[in-house]
Structure formats: structure tokens, C-alpha cells
Image 1 (tube, chains in turn blue, brown):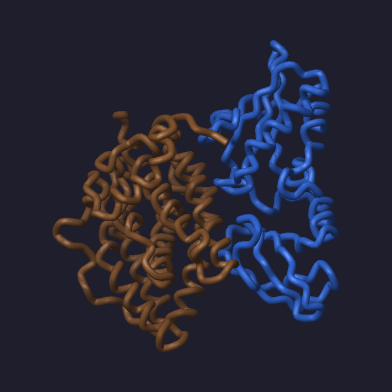
Image 2: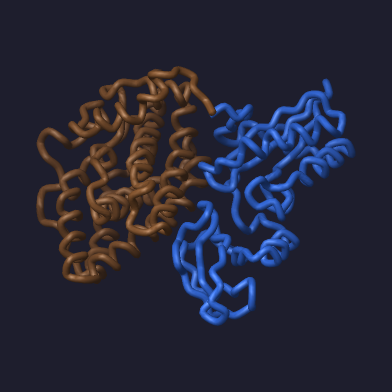
Length: 181
Length: 239
């Protein structure tokens, strides 16, 4: 369980939240944000919406704030080390990646470009959640292969906790659906 | 380890850890592949909760793998063996409904648990949804599935009062109100599943609240032996 990250248990780690990012912080954020998600490599961490902030202290130390998609997301350790590597390669000697829980990540944090890429790779993107409603949503989920709205649920949990398994009743293809969270 | 919320972190963390392990026991044995994956994913969510909660108190690995039975603070409900699939679903229905309502409450009050509860409650809503659908499918299914679901709901009913014993450090939670809400919700699911609410006692004299005090039922020791064996035999093992 050694991931090289510390877990922020609340809002405590979000220092300098009001300060606008400096040019260097914005640049490092672009570098960290380009790192692909280990489980959905078509998406970058920025598109997935899990990169919260990059802070550079006066001493030049870099701290990256990352939020997990799911509480038990096993990819968070890989994400952290991938970010560290990308920033090292960019010339940053010392990087700390901290995990923050609040505010909780939501599928609404996935960017429009991220949703487009998901659909393009055969994963039906999550529908907008909007308010904190109950889980069951009845809007139709379109087949990412043929576009039909006639799809059925096979299993509420698929290859990862964040996806459900569905099948298209028109073209017959099974596909993953990124569940709304 | 003296702050009251430490006790609460252990209680909630142990519930999540122990149920996660019990659900993990289905790996390789579930009725269908999709269901095996679903139970493993639910187990993973619970393990994520357990890691955060136990890390509030100390080293997560030491707490999970090096504590003896009497130091665990989990409910008796979560430590019971999986039984048949209906037993696992009945437990998921009872526990996920409880956890959802409890975390909803914790998410809206200011404590050490607010951030975790706000995050986990969204995942737990899917656990409850999963349990509800299976309860309906089995209860309102064949004569065989109905009978098994009925037996499972009755067998685990005796462990359900313990969930609503007040937990030290969770002062913001009105447990009697939580219990009332839980009863309404579970009764409504059982009714839709053509099942009846069990009429047996919801606790026994020697079980109510005992898990929170470290007194456990017999199967728990065997479960711990299996769960802790690798770490105890090969300290610091990794792969």
C-alpha cells in the first residue's frame, strides 16, 4: 500500500487556494495535466478532472493536488508516480503529490473534450448529473458504436468500479458506460 | 488513541474493511462473471473507505493486519460468512442502506468524516441500488429464489439492531431517527420483492452492540486468520 502519496482528509491541504496560479504554476499544471490516465489512456488527467492544483513554494518545491475518482481507486498510486516522472523530466527536482478528497470528484468534472474522446473509444460518456439526486437516471444512454438509443443494462459494475456494462439492442455490441458519480 | 472520533473511525473503518474482505471471498465463486466483478468492485470501494478511515487513526497496514480479534470494532453483521448468494445480497441490502443514510448525515455535518462521507455516499448509493435490484429479482423470482431470499433476510435480521447503537464520536448522528428511516426503506424494498419484513428479534441479549466493544462471533476469528496470515508470516511482503 505504499504509494508515495499522503492523503488529505479534508480541506486542510488546499493552501493558497485564493491566490491565482503563477505563470510557472500554470506551465507545470499543463505538464502534469497531459499525463494520460492509467486505466483510460485516451484521457489526460486534466480532461478527467482529477488534477486540482499545482503549487510552487518560495523554496521551489512543487506540490500537486490530485483527487481520486472513486475512494478506492487503485490507479491513484500510478497517477502520482506518472505525474512525478513527467515533472522530473520537465526539470523539476522535487515533487510531492497529495491526495485531496474535498470537494468530491464528480463525472461532471470530465471535460467536453474528455467526453468526446470516451465516446470515440467506445465508452458511453456519463450523462450530466447536475444536482445531487439519487442514482437511477432514466435518460437513454446511446450506443457508442452505432448511436442507437436502444441499449440495455447487463451489469451495474463493469471492468472498473466507474463503469457499467451495457449492450446495444440495435447492433448487438456490448459496451462500457461511464457511470454518473 | 484517545479522541472520541478515533473510536468512530475504527468502527466505521472496520465495518468497511471486514465487509470488503467478505465480499472479496466471492472472487472465483460468484454465480456469473458480471456479478463477481460487481461484488469485487463494491469490495474495492469499501477497501478505499477503510484505508482512509484507518489512516486517520494510525498505520493502515498495522491496524488491518496486526490487530487481534478483540481490537476490531466492526458490526457482527459484516463479519458473518457470505452464505449463499441470497445471504450476501440480504446483507448488502441491510448494510448499504444503513451506510448510505449514515454517510448522508455525516456528509452534512462538520467533522473529521465530512470529506470522506461526501465522497463515499455517492458510491454507496450504487451499492444500495445493486442490492435492491437483486432483492427484487430474487424475491420476486422463482419459488426457489424467493425461498432463499426469505431465509437470508430472516437469518441476518437478528444482526440489524446493532447498527443503531450509538457510536462514540458520532454525536451528530441521531441513531433512533436513522433506524426509523432504515426500517422504512428496507420494508419498502422487501414489500416490492414480495417478501415480508422478518418478525424475529433484531438483536440477541449477547449480541447487541458487542461488535463495537470488540466481542465477536465465532466465524470472525477464522476470517481474520486468513486475512492476516500473509502479512503476519511475511512482514512487509510486497509484489
